[in-house]
Image (cartoon, rainbow over all chains, first blue to last red; front, side):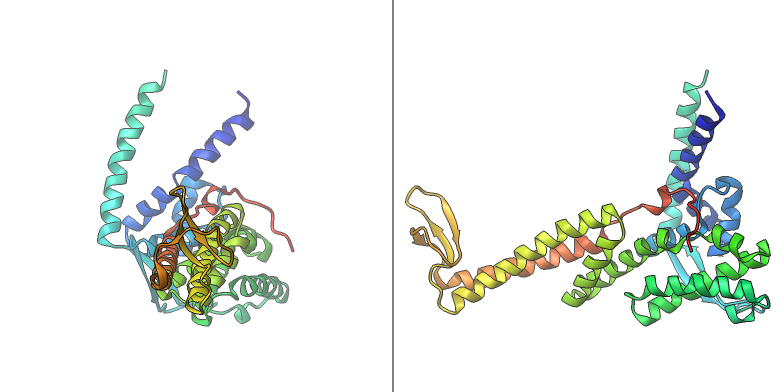
Amino acid sequence: MTNETLADIEKRWRKGVLPFAVLAVLGQGPVHGYGLALALRNVLGAAIPEGTLYPLLNGLERDRLAVAEWAIQESGPARKTYALTDTGREVLQEAIERWGTFGRKLGELMP
Amino acid sequence: MTRLTDIADAAARAALADYFVKVDRLLAPLSQDAAMETRRELEAHALDLLTEEGEAQAALSRLGNPDEFLPELVAEKLRGRAARSFSPLHVTAALASSARSGIAGLILSTVAGIGYALAALLITMGTARLLGQMSTGLFRLEDGRYFLGFGETLGGTDMLGLWFVPAAYAAALTLYFILTLAFGRIRLRKTAQQGRKPMSG
């Protein structure tokens, strides 16, 4: 298997976990778009343009999994910060459990 | 830095200004408040990236081409607005925006558009009957089949008479409300599946 194929596999799974990863970061506390992108860089690398997080955040807000509010900063521009709602926390908790099950089952396939 | 105009480097300021001209164009279908809110959010992100990267093109490349992620965001916001207001104007704007947001959005708009056209046809039929066009209505043919007549008739028995008018209006309104609710709730996830693409312009 070539490095190119491996890179493609890795890129696909990084993109696939994006919604879960966003929920997980929000689960650590309120965060703005740039902060979210920073937190996700280690997980996602440079595969995803950071602007693509905003449709995702909008979807979380629309589905009432997250709420947003503008926070005035001492320095720098005002920022819209996102925080999980109770429903969002429940979904995250369930997603963590399912991820654990998925990881175990995937692990069983490994040689 | 709190605003684009605070950027000291003229070239970087110009690059970001160009980028946000494109952003403003893409956000134009939204209400002024919604467009301003999204722009402010992206501006803050761009300024953070500029501070981090030190170079405008690198910062904007990291943020991504707005043509790649804003149409989906705008279309989703417009569908949400249409589902809250049920205004035909908002529905029309949402249909147009979704159709421009990509293949999935185009298919969604086409399917929803066919549904709205059917609702409009029912209203037209109800109105035609109200205005005395007797060949418009629900008819039962001699062989037992039912036939929705509009303008021309195959004969048969008029099943509803003038009750066809409220029935057609009620069916149209029900279809309109159900379609608009569904249209506003549907999720199209495209950007999360996209990789980085080079910025153009």
